[in-house]
Image (tube, rainbow, N blue to C red; front, side, top):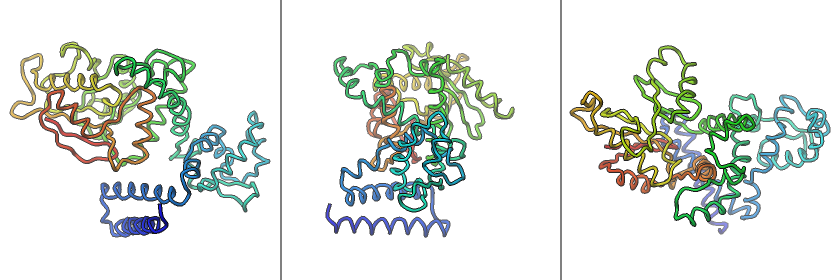
Length: 393
């Protein structure tokens, strides 16, 4: 990349940031505009870094090893609100005293990224700043669990992606072991392994990591996961999941106010079952919601899930009636898509899904292809970030 093109990138960056600031001050900045602009800022700064630093230094700069090591040692918690010298860190680390030389190198690597403040170059006197507070375990904006999960479970799993890809190729594309299974040496479902006494801390960290990562997104939607459920102002909502998860969901929801508890019901089912009766899906309802489900399944399985939901939508309930009489039933599909404007959040979580569970983050065209394959006739895309809502008849 030439110097002239780099200068043009910088000029565009100034223009975008200036517009963001001006519209923010005037109160004219809409959430979608802010999202698009910040993604452009992210892309521009990455392009400028690559142009100025070159590929080697840029690659080293974005590597996560120093951040991971500092996170594991708890350096931010040790420093706290005080000023600490490198020589004082061994006393604070106690049983981790032998890591102090490593801590010195790690912290020095992070200073250039703005995570620490130092009292003069080479002084090895450190203090926390606002940016590094995200690595303080009790900070309201902590990303400790997210960084630990990504740099541990995901990085180890990703190291085996080539191996698992070859295995999948040898089976004709059928679902095989995920890279996560190979990395940690087990054959059972991931969440079942996470629930083992020896691994429960990993499951808890993963759950907290997902919450922390989702703070990065300007979305507040109906959501259900294997361990927690968050609903915003629902009138009535039925949560259907596999049997072993229903009790966890019900227990998590029991901590909500009584007025909220009466608005949600839980029922076990299997949306991959071969017949509609076996799925247990409610029939003939006016609206159905699928959120963050399809990325965990192969194309064949995802098409099967969508086909079962469509069959339930157009069927009558046990009394032979349909609550959606006079109107076409609708499916709201909320899934993360790979798009040209996707940011690092989407790329990171896409690699997580791929390495942890053979999951796929699909493009919009690929998702629409699955919907068509399942028999849906009309797709209306509703813009929402970083997820995409699809309103489907």
